[in-house]
Length: 547
Ligand code: FSO
Ligand code: SF4
Image 1: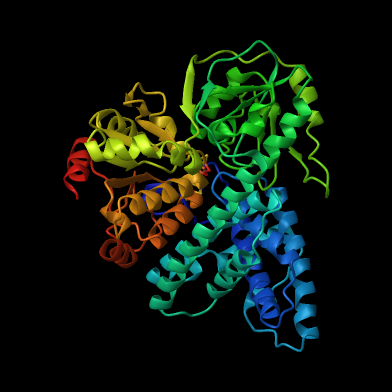
Image 2: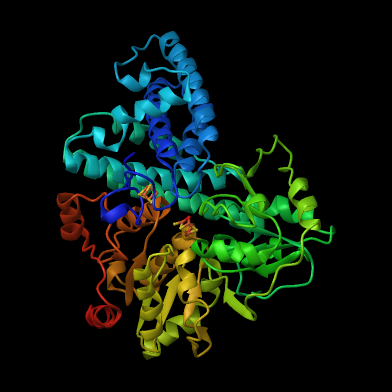
């Protein structure tokens, strides 16, 4: 195996024996091979699209396959073997359609290679894995594009589950994936990287529309972080349609539902607040799950990443359920919903009834729900506070949390920020500071949480609105600094989206991606002012000195 797609890549280079995330080499190899087959499908469907015969079924095969290969989403060997088999079958059907359309089938290996066993699938990764691209810069750019596409695919899937889809996004996803099989010059790959960012904005806007049209606009909300006395289910990940199905089925059964990690923002949506079984949020960011799942006592449903494979001795091992693109060997996987129906969560609800209520680990409330609509309603005092100087600067601290010690930086950074600054956050990065007593500025909280990582889109919308209100030509003239924490590939699409919107001087930490070659990193530094982090004191000084 060789994998360097996330921030935990071993030694800052890549994981070669086993992933720091827990991914075993067999699964890593199967993921490489699945990606390879998805490239073949993308080539064929792009050909069909060009003659107006694109196959809509290809959309889901590709976005769902890409999503499953995201860090911490799916650790299930068997699930990947099945996916590859299905993908090969689908690819061969597409080949038939390409031939029937009178088009030539190219000679890329992803169009012709075939095999039937898991062993052969694994072995293929030696030829088609990341290192098969020998030019370091080309490899770096191609992987940057692919990781952006993985993030895009994840967000597209959530929107799709809410019946929001845009064919142009799927078309781009496949065109771009197909292009990664070609010998393209570096400048074209840079162009494709930036174009990926454009579609990143589009997909986040689409998901925003999907979420808000289904569940209302998030509103300022106090979320309980203590527990009640009923047995309960913990729901993690990002998929709001799963949240809806679960709440509907749990309501009135005596079983409560708590959100975990990136599902916290579900508590901000008016439609979800109507359910009396929604009890609040339990625990913190994804990486603390080993302790928190023990004390939760009830079953846990993963709708997406981030899963940490449980230890052998974990008492919660038989309480884990997965659904959608997520998977874990030994966990029960809840199948997709049938057209017009809900997913069937009855097994989890019955399981919960046999469990003890969660053990309290925290108490009190946290505040969130500042997505764009809510911020616009509060725009007047915010703009006023900027004009009077009560707010000196905003700090966008969106992105991911993670288990590396070096991420203590973000807690310290937030705590040390001067009191006339406001943190704008989204994603699980927030858990580093959303429980700190940072206070408010004339009633405006010093941590403004827009929601999930995809709600970084909301932060961008807010920035663009402020630009308009202040009559500025450039979003970079605003008193906003960007200190973003990344972990996996959704953060990559968020980053590319921000670059597309023209945001400059983004600081990225706790380390720069291992997949950026020195030359590619140089391009990002020179053209976009991308930088790393040092230490909180030094960085705060630097940010405050910047215009
Ligand atoms: Fe976090 Fe995990 Fe949302 Fe990621 S829970 S790390 S960027 O999956 O997607 O923020
Ligand atoms: Fe390593 Fe990250 Fe890849 Fe896991 S996803 S194998 S931690 S680089």
